[in-house]
Amino acid sequence: MMVPMPVSETNPSKPSARLARTVAVTSGKGGVGKTFFSANLATALSRQGLKVLV
Image (cartoon, rainbow, N blue to C red; front, side, top):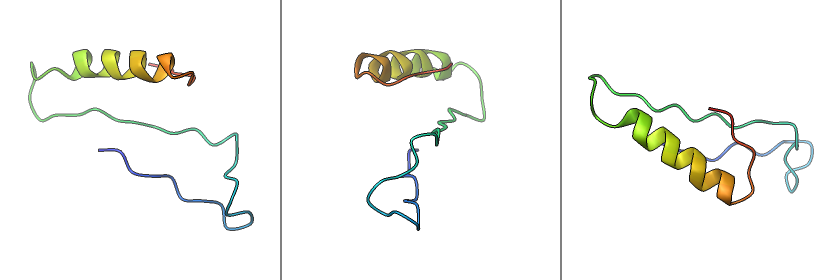
């Protein structure tokens, strides 16, 4: 699930450039495609020009 990051109260139109976003991919059981999804999400975000760390 992805939720938008809160906007800074001091400057609502421009969030801090140093603020990193974290995405967690979890499941209660194994073999449901967490690694597959994570790799493809990282690839898609990277192709959009975003910096990605897996």
